[in-house]
Image 1 (tube, helix red, strand yellow):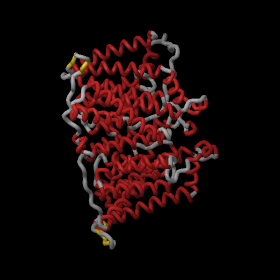
Image 2 (cartoon, one colour):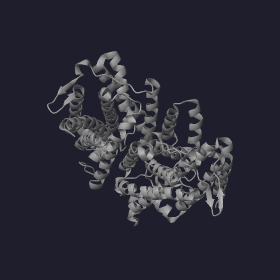
Image 3 (cartoon, rainbow over the protein chains, first blue to last red):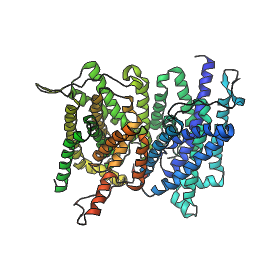
Length: 286
Length: 334
């Protein structure tokens, strides 16, 4: 394999990796607060992409992005408010099953509204074409996606670690009852975190739609990788999610270049090794 | 056996006889096959408190193993059934060993992750598995009992065979659940911390439960591979894993008959609705959401509520459990 191909594969891996990190950060926050892996996270990513193409038709590319994030975040808030909230007192497994049911409903709804066939979507004219990076030529739009997702992920990290509201979220993850006892409206924190986490997934789908195209199953396809990122990175650890996201993305991309049939399986092999070596995740505390 | 238990068993036998009259024999066979897989999940979810979202791993691995053995070696029926069961149990022992290191959410995600790993291997390794097209051309060997060879070529004959082995599996599962081992499993579900405190090696028993369930699921997978003469890629995908969870949940967890009811309701409904509307998983999703929000005990709970509403004389049986909830599995547990 020559350097140009290798560089291309690594860059592709970083683009997917940052997307995984974006999904992983949202999942991780929801997981930390609610103790559930949100099975609907994947389909909300898909929904973001579909809302994006419809929104872009009406309001242009940036308008489409905005529509996607707002629509998906509002749906996320509704899921928490009308569904998850009713299940706080029962075992978290039921919340998982609720999210699984929602995932089925939303996937089928996407097929009903937008059809079962794959759709391609073009990035804005300004961002088409490639840039010569010296080692390899790389599509402009993918570089922009990489930069945007990186900024978003770092923004989330800074928000959670450096702001007052971030401290409240961390307090909620650490000890819900104590946080509530100190006068924090923990249910509102839950709803807002759920909305933010799912909104990020929707935005991720919207951003990736010109890169990967759209398929009704795209959400289900990406979900296991987002899970791997969370497990590998460590529960509730945002730097862990970022590191694991990049690791998974680059390994998957390199394996695709080396031996494509093993690419996806290698990611899960990586997770298995990670769990055996560090059960708490790469940067997890517990 | 109490009168209630006898009555339930009688109803089960009646259902086995009546089912092929109500639905096509193929659907009837599918119901008992998935009932076996559902019983297996019920053992680890309903009785031991671990929700596995990756049961298709064992189902699919056994189905592929059986299919390959029958295609390439013309292996006899009972050998294939045994082999599939062993493959399911061994895979569950290996995967379970890693998964039970973690509890709760992590456990679920790990089982799901492993399922995806095997799915992608089956999907990409087309030379062996046929990939997306599935593994076709699986014969259905006769049941050889000594000199006697019973042909199973018609779907009704196959149904009789499936129903018979289902009863064997049901009996085996009942024995396991009622045994001291089954009681230990339930103690782990109720309170893993306390089970450990009284001296049980919680991880070891979880591992045993997971392995047994893998064997049962593999057994079901073999029966499935022979039914249509093809192993579809779907049989190792998360869709089947989800379906199994779904059936157990609809039926009612922690009750021996729950998964049976769930499998029957699920397969019958999906057969009926899929003829009418292609988008039937939508209805499935709605049903799941409604069950989770309003009827967490499943169909068993619905029957109980109905009975309580209809009969004022209804009183709890001796030893009856409280309406089933999932045990609180906490991080402190292991």
